[in-house]
Picture 1 (cartoon, helix red, strand yellow):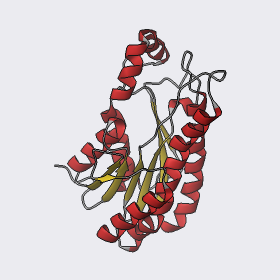
Picture 2 (cartoon, rainbow, N blue to C red):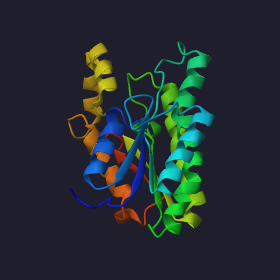
Picture 3 (tube, one colour):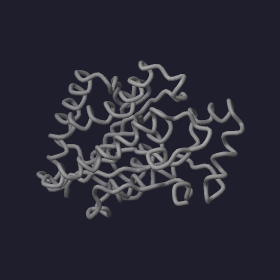
Length: 242
């Protein structure tokens, strides 16, 4: 076991699968006390778009541990559809699943994130998730609402960096490219041509894995990144670089 995150109290939403699960696993290996949150299959269960549930959840976590040093907002859900086919209900559902699901945990965690510096832990780190789709459109991907939501996370996080700075709370985004998870595997199976389109855009001709994202999150969560806030890290095989 390494000690890059030794003594750090980390809350990871969306921890039951995909990128969130990969981050929670590596955080634990690096010495953090991890509280995984998801709708099921995690240390804590909650509907992260329900204001009352989120408020109660973070009150429990904060009272139990006295502070939160790291908040990783990996939970998200979206409806992928073309403009002409997307209903207004699905549009609103996606923005809830991309924006509200970041806003509510961050607001509820804020008093406990402020305690990180107050208790001599050097300050707190928020890691949010934008997307390659916040920077470019991908041919063949019906991601209109997803693009809007992730673009919103990018802007929100810059504001959080400014509001958090007086309290030694850093806020950054990771913008993953295509990452192989159970959810994306279903998408690949449904449309074999889509993988070809993704790889054609990638400079590195491979698909990412959750661990590729988790190592960046580990660095951002650690004291190694104490001078980093308001930044966005594109982990996308070079897809948005050309």
